[in-house]
Length: 148
Ligand SMILES: [Zn+2]
Image (cartoon, rainbow, N blue to C red; front, side, top):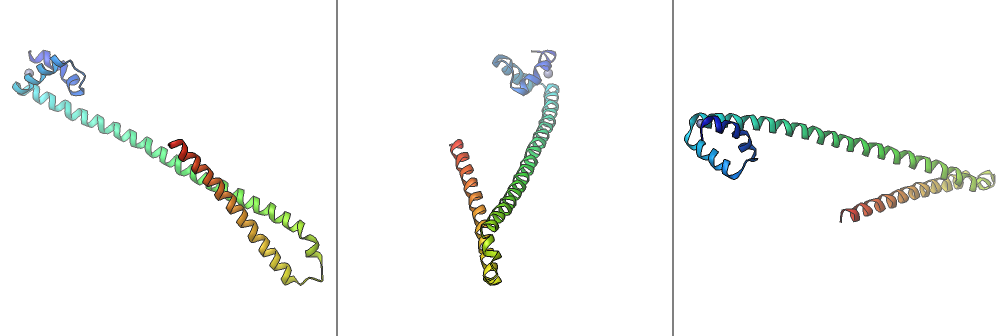
């Protein structure tokens, strides 16, 4: 094959999108022709550059995905914090209603009242924390099963 016939095939040869017969012709010609070999090398460099550009695009997408993931985690974290605080406030209010009579009883020392309040508050915080943990574990278990 002549150079003019080989040149149009070089790009396809580089991409591996070429018939077996043509591939052998190109390889034979490249081993013999200095000019086409130089042309081919410039194609190889060009391909490297465009491949690198494609990699850069890909990693941009990956970074975007990463930041989306981080944002989602922060968002979820904040959601959980507000939900926990809200639950604690409501349960504390409920607890206060429950112990109202006790609190308004003047015969009971304020130390006992303070002790009961603190214990109740601690129990509420623990309850919310445990529920949250259960929900989280349930969720991760489910994800694991999906992966399996
Ligand atoms: Zn040639």
